[in-house]
Length: 102
Image (cartoon, rainbow, N blue to C red):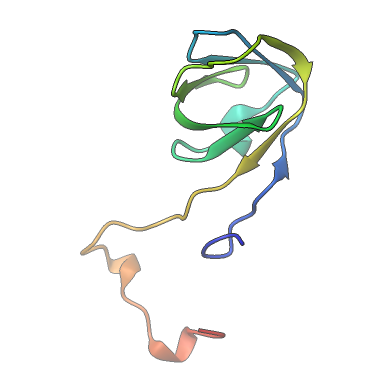
């Protein structure tokens, strides 16, 4: 179940490639800058990794490093992490009248 209204198993645009021992995911026709946030979890061939950096639309960094066989031209899904606002921000103050379904 997704937390805080975020999506789970969101299909990413394009395909990805991974290399055993490396912490880089390389995309083809991907749009990582638009679809991915640091802290999200990417799934490739049923293997999960946390996204720790986004370099460009076609390159991101994961943790831990890819530990199984290389992949190439495969689809990937994304589980979005819960989003939050910094404490003390004016945006964290909200009227209880605006909270629904909790």
